[in-house]
Length: 363
Ligand SMILES: *Cc1c(COP(=O)(O)O)cnc(C)c1O
Image (cartoon, rainbow, N blue to C red; front, top):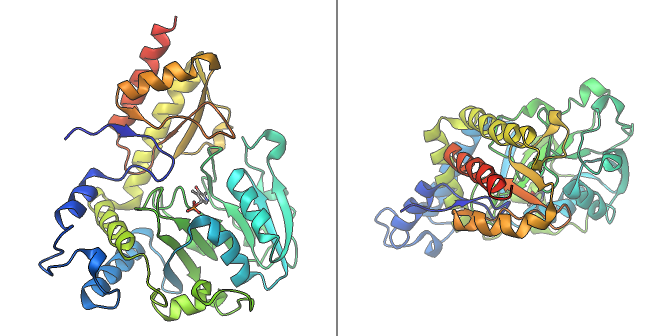
């Protein structure tokens, strides 16, 4: 079946092979007579699914032994509260504000700790990245928060900051919701990374947290037990019922990623996909992208028609060509093409062909 290309920012397109596999196994997983949805989360069948998912993820992202992998619920937004409840002890926390998501994270953290804005790109309307050398880091910060890919604004850290080199001993907390598994991670620079699954890993409902062991066990007393990292870790993410089906489908995605050649190969493809689209936009007088070239997201590409009166016609024509969900986020406007791991080069080619054709019909 030929499916349309889906450019949704999230929940986002999944690899067709993964959906087909899940469909095949829907009524009877591996001869068990059960759908994965119908299994006890503590039974041997689901435990084997969970254990394989964790092992594959550790392998794919090269997660070191001294980090815990937690399968949680609540999404990125819940983590905005769960992280300060677990790590801040009510003290000072540094935030680097680079777009809508890090701004939201900082606002939520204010309920639990003393938020200090170490740097911001608000003066550039979130189209640049503040140079880490210029960040005003607090000497007593419990952690430093960044969003390594701003899904709405299309700004990405192509390299994680090295806080030690900046003279800080605080752990780095990274919201990597919208580019996890799109490239390798340098764990030597990370204290904790979290992300909702629905952009690049699987269905909504699963939240991934990867946390360095020495950061566990310092939660504030109002922290809900089900959201206390130490409790979740000591129960292998089974303190309460985890999102079993979402873990299973994410596990299928991890297997698919391994068959593709892993995250280094994904990074190579993502670089090529993004270059094709940005180069086309930059060469055009009809379309524009406003983000500084050194920090453009490889996952989320916001772009504008210079004549915004043509937006509706653009979207209608795109849909007729099987190019779905290109409308930009309401806070930014224009268009946004999200080109996560599951988007093949052919999809980006089809988009660029359409953009070229649309421009011609408008002349
Ligand atoms: C989508 C997203 C979130 C929010 O995730 P929810 O699962 O809706 O809570 C947080 N951060 C980033 C960077 C995102 O892209």
